[in-house]
Each structure stands twice: as C-alpha cells, then as structure tokens.
Image (cartoon, rainbow, N blue to C red):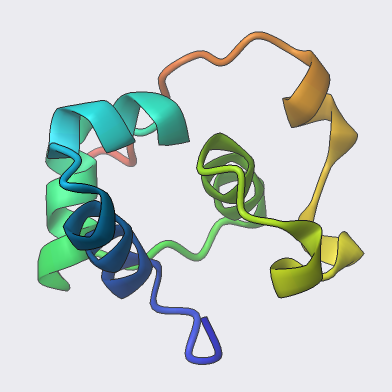
Length: 88
C-alpha cells in the first residue's frame, strides 16, 4: 500500500483468499470490469472516496491505513456498487 497501487492490493487479497473478482468487486463496491482494469494496471484508483469505499469494503484495519483514509459514513451506510469511471 506504500505505492498506493490498489490493483496490486486487490489481486493479492484475492490470491490469499481464493476470492473471485465478482466477489471482491461486490465487497469493495466496484464493478467487476473496473476491478479487472485495476488489477491489470489499465486503470488506477485515485478518487479518495472510492479508495475509502474500497478499504472499508475489504475491512482493511485502520492500523494499516491510518484514520485519514477511513470514513464512518461507509461503515454505517448500506453498500451500493459503484460502476467505476466511464471508459473512453
């Protein structure tokens, strides 16, 4: 996470948990095609709101992210899938 490469983070989490892209995308509030682009390096996650949603969706401990990257709004509101930025 030092390099803030969230695609690598997602891929590593999936490798460690044998999780499918569909499943992680649902947990993280991203679309599966967008998650695929993150993992392949075609896209980068730079929007702070999406980063917070991703970290909360994956239940990444605050000790790893620091309190600045956590938002209680995501913890208390129902998760809705974010489609990912439009492509093109």
